[in-house]
Length: 474
Image 1 (tube, rainbow, N blue to C red):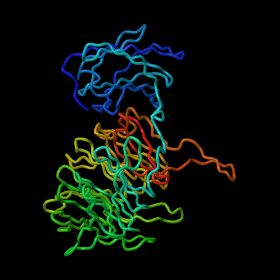
Image 2 (cartoon, helix red, strand yellow):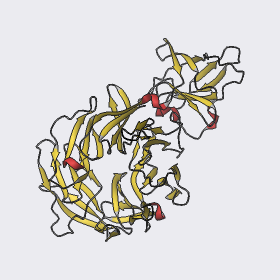
Image 3 (spheres, rainbow, N blue to C red):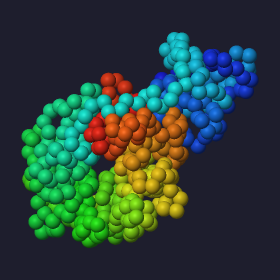
Image 4 (spheres, helix red, strand yellow):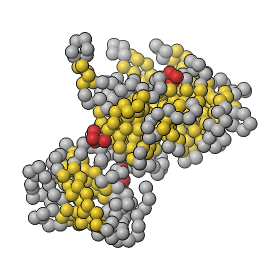
């Protein structure tokens, strides 16, 4: 978001409470929260009620006011309270309140014009739209490329573009070989690569429509490649190298370095210390590879369980040498995400509702296997994706619980403003046509991207069980 105008702005906020709400407790400014730009998470003026603290928080987005300008909060019959906007021109206030309050906000903008808005305390479910349009068969991954949403539809053997506004297929798809089970794709301008679990990895060109296999001559054949990343004329693919399932066994895993040139080919590789490398991200000039370790479904409940340790490697892509490693024990680290400044690395567990946090500047694990960020205690769940918005809101999911969770990527705070609780994709129970019994409708959140639809910013969620798109407006 852009910075605001340099003119001083004095804002007067008059809060009027409806539905029989009266009190004498004055507002409490921000409680010295460690989050530097909390209100930056919103795209609009919004108020939420926190069931735990019994307080209302109201926040405005960037450019609402001049950075560090005075904000005067006035309540009839009470002494006005003055606070200041944050460095991006946003603001946030917390105060004892009710879930059914309406709040009137009056202020003067940078042009000297009076503005007024009445904001009702809302529930995050108000901004949720579930299963808006269908995706393909068994959609697995999703990328936002210049406003076009590309989805890896594993069951359709395709990577297909969708219009972000109407969520309908648009343009030409990228075709994968039949029965290849495409898994993940990475884009850089008009070119990219995708992996398939059964047929190796492929290069594609969006301008020409060319799709060609990546040659491995002189190096190991791809072994059930999963994650991929791309930077200009080079790319990387991780190879879990499964030997058997039930019981699960993995051979030596490795990262393949790919050079495009006149034809795409592997021209380097590096072995991982831990087994089962599944995800790779290129960031800050380094590769980050998460190795899940051996995972199997253990009786009697057959929940996924980590049997060997895993962790994250930091690799110099120029030398293909491991320069740092972070051991996450039996946490089975999988998908990764970064805070906007690149300092904090987050990794999701593939066997539990857990998130791990690493301070890359201090080279220190802040939340590891012994003290993870717990988003869900349900047995049998896992976290299939991590998405971080440009403003710093980390979005993830508990797959088997069908819930979307939020963190502040700068502080690791769980359930930050404006989302004080997870969002359940299926709050309504579905009755059985045969027995009359009810159960939650299950969507299966698989991936998410930050996007803009019809002029609104938000999170687009890909669900794999229902094979469709859901939307949370920010």
